[in-house]
Image (tube, rainbow, N blue to C red; front, side, top):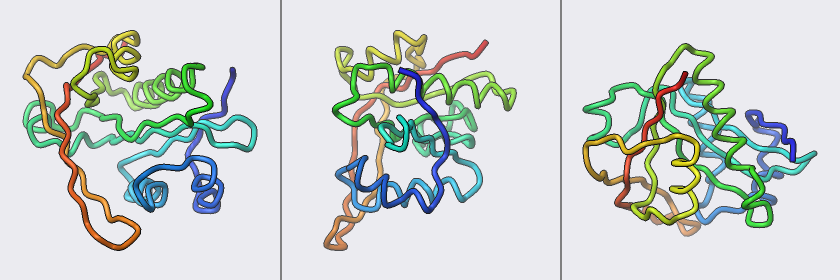
Amino acid sequence: MKLDIKSPKRKDLPVLNSKLPVIVPNFHENQLKEQESGDNLYLIAWKGNEPIGHLLIRFGGTKIRKVKNYLKKVPHLEAMGVREDFRRKGVATQLVKEAERLIKKRNLKIIGLAVEDDLKSAPNVLYRRLGYKDWGHGEVIDTWKFIDEKGKTHIKHEKCIYLIKRLK
């Protein structure tokens, strides 16, 4: 399945919110704000006029402190999601490959990402199939903050494995 992968615009928010539901309120709007900061790129996989997947590239590196200490500004992939009815159809692979292409275009040589600490999880299997390897410095804790629909702030902590790939 050939997809059109590109960055969304503000005008795309209604269709993103209706066709790419997520559990974090204002998720797509927040990713667009990250993109507008200038150092990130939010990618959407489109099948025709329908968004079916998303991925954020942080060109300035991860926010995970332990990783940042070792890898400084290595581009980091996060916030990957694929609509349930399009999973296991190559959407995630196309998103990652497009991110790699855009990172290589900037003459950057390494890319990183955090993945749940479960070797059998679908994302972990995907990234390893695409050539990502354990970074060699142990597990990390990925932490993020979100505000729910009632305005309450939550902080989420997730134990992860950090993977890197050297781009050719």
